[in-house]
Length: 290
Image: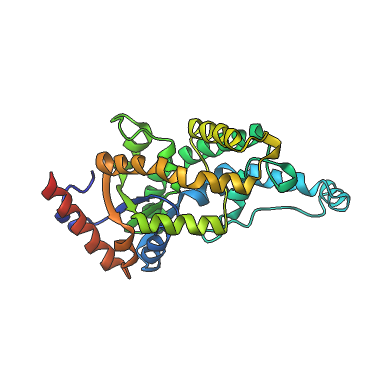
């Protein structure tokens, strides 16, 4: 790790961290607190994905839907209007809307082949965005003179890396440039995430093998064809399994490549000083266990 002790962290002129873990446990919450302090540059992986690597996919998909409406089709073909994605740090809906949900088209679902294609596009986009972290660390200092840096990753980072492989390209690069911090939830947090997701299911990205397993299991369990799948019912059914699938991967990332803090601890952070002290305590505890 780039900070081997609490003293290393305390004395660092430039602090560089990367948050990972399930969405909804505080990654963006604490990133916003640090950014608002004025000394931290906030690099959002999901924002980078939506603007740099999937922007054209998102816009072209919206245009394709608009072209189905004769009135809009004529305006688009004559360049009288344009369609764009209004993505922001606070509104990443264009990315999730493009990812979509598999199942019955009449219920807003995608054919599974198209869904898999978009999942693969997202996988490649996220890997590229993660590997851009070093570029943005340098850019934050060179252009804007920010002393500190936060990388706010999406929940699916663990799907594309092998935390047990000491030569993993993505983890090697990220740990070389940042302190990787897992925001870990407990059973109560997990239950709350499931409750929230059940109320408002949102598209997710999945490891290809995991998706194949849960998709086949869902079809078998419900005795339905691909075209009969209710998209929301499928992703609700899958969500808790996805949490269980990701948990040991996050744990291995923290054990081999970084540190872990709890979502409760993150929820108690009110300013940059609170965060500094939390990381110092975490590094001290890790060193004492070594």
